[in-house]
Image (cartoon, rainbow, N blue to C red; front, side):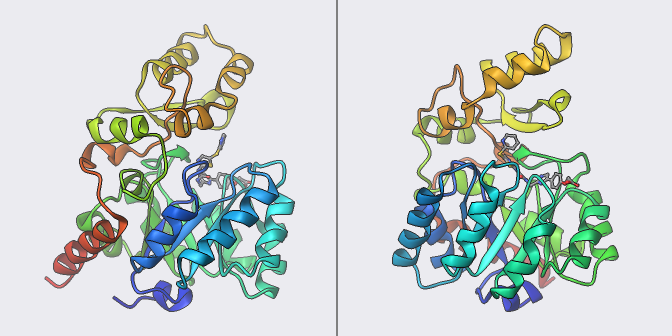
Length: 308
Ligand code: TUI
């Protein structure tokens, strides 16, 4: 399948793996790239040496293009942004903020720049700032989210921009991909489906929570802190949601008890104190498979529908 996204990124299929903080490390990224998509390594709030090591290890595992996600709320985003230039990274996606100040240097270095955006206004700003494409991310996504849904956001962003649009949020199979293309997207970004992949290095408890999740098993917490996050429902995330609703947990207390909670979920599988970030589509993810099978199934499903 050829779109402006496969041409821009030099990949076989227009499927980009989400740059999930703490989750998206080099094994997963290399597996998705080797499957024909674009794997991403998440910079998150990682130390610079960790990300450098991950980029180099990924290059050892694949000769296909892969990228890095820069989480702009990270205190060391400046250093991680420069590292991408120094290490010859080919694709950068960004999240949780406006990457405008980094775009000129990334473009100068020949990096393809793809900001993740939750609104038309920010999408337009990113196009004007020189972005090569955008990921229009609906509120169905896992992690830090905006308010608009994929179904509403994607066609409006497509109408507002000249550059290609990648749809994200609630896509986990060929039907979702075909639907996104009907809305005008030329690529999809997929996170939750890859959580339940063989190559994903998260704690087995995290994978089990994804596989067991039903349609109603995701919850958004932290709206009152200004950083709403979609999680799998657990005792911990329900406690946060209730504390927010009934006022028993102040925003400061919320920030305090969620500090380090991504690591506790991903590395320790700690269901009492961990935040298991996950999209609303988890109910449809029921089996752990290799990334190559996941990508092949999504592509086969989408191509069949789009050929009708
Ligand atoms: O970034 C994400 N998803 C994430 S980042 C993350 S780590 C984190 N940990 C604690 C608190 C917050 C984040 C977990 N999941 N997705 C892309 C995304 N970007 N969603 C929403 C946005 C966004 C929001 C505001 C992008 C730009 C933006 O701009 C505001 C401005 O500066 O105008």
